[in-house]
Length: 423
Ligand SMILES: [Zn+2]
Image (cartoon, rainbow, N blue to C red; front, side, top):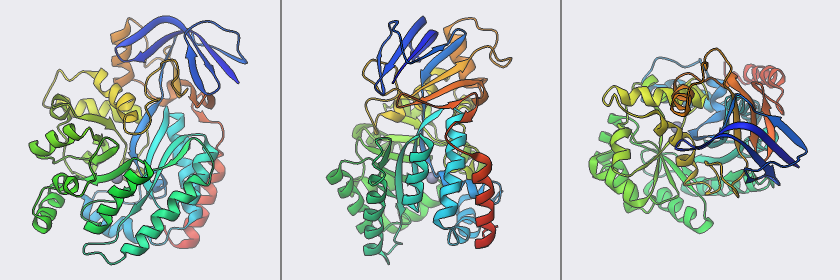
C-alpha cells in the first residue's frame, strides 16, 4: 500500500519546511519527498502537511464522565465525583467511551495517545479497532501505606499482557503508577524496575497541585520528583504528567535525567491547579510535551485547542513565547520518550501524518510559513483537517474517524451507564 501526497506545503518540523513538494509513503513509512506513482494519490494543493499530534497524557475512557463532574478542585473532584462513579464502571463502558474519545482525537489530528486507565483488554481492543497509535497504561495504586501491593503488581502484569495480546504494532503498554501520593514506596520501586526490565516507557502524575506537594513532603520529607528519583523512576523514558509545582532543583533534575514533562494546561486551569511555567522549564533544557489529560477535566481531546491554551498560558508572563514551541511540544517532544521514529516528517519515520486545508475561513489568507505556523496554533480546528494518516493508513477524513461508529458507541455507552447506575 503506497500513498503519494502531492503539491503540498510540507512542515517537516516547525523550523524545516518545503514550500511545495511531495511526500511518498510506502509500507507504513515515509520514503522520500520525490514524485512516484502510488496506489492512492492525494492532491494537497493549498494544504499543509505536518506530523500527527501526540497527546502525551490522557485518560481517554473518562469520556463517560464528560460534563458530569464540574467546578471542583482536584482533591474533591476525585474523591466526591470521579472515584465513586469509577467503582461502577465495567469493560463495556470503557470500550465504548474509549472509542468515542479516539474518534474525537483522530478527527482533530491526534495520531498517538499516551493513556492511563483500567480495563486494558477493552481499551486495547478499542485502540486496535480505531487505528490510533496508543501507549496504554494500567493506573496502578495500592495506597500509602500499601494495602494491595501484590494485587496491583498482578493487575499490572495482566494489563501488559492484555495490551500485547492485541498483536497490533500500534498498541503498546506503558508502566503507569498513578502518583507518589496514591502508590506505596514498594509499588513505585517495582514500577521503575519493571520499566527498565521490560524496556517500556513510564508515566506518572507529579506535582499537579500545591496541596498535594505539601502533603507528600510531610510524609516523605522531599519534594515529589526528588522522591521519585531516589526510587529510580526518573529517566529518559519517563513522562511526568503536569509538574505544575516543581522546585528549581527538580526542574534541573528532570532536565539532567532527560525525562519528559507532559504539560496539560486546560486541565490545570479548569481544576484550578495552576500554570506550569514551562517557558522556564524549556530554558533549563527540559523536554516538554503536551497532553489534554482526561476528557472529564478538559472537556475535549483536541490538541489544537491544547496548543493554543498552552501558548496563551505562557504569554501571561512571557509575551514573546513563540508559537512554534508548542508545535514542537505536540509533535517531536512527545515522541522522544516513546518512539524515535515519530514526530517529524523524514524518510524512515513512521507515516503518522495530518493534512490540513488552508482554504477554510479561519485559516485564510495564506501569507507565509511563519504566518501558517501562527495560524495552526491560534486559529486551526480539527474540522480543517482533510486527512489523518496513522502508520500509512488514512484513518480519518474530513473530520470523521473512518473506523468508528460514533452514533452506535454513544448509544451503547449511555445504555450501559444507565444499567450500572453511573449516571
Ligand atoms: Zn492525569
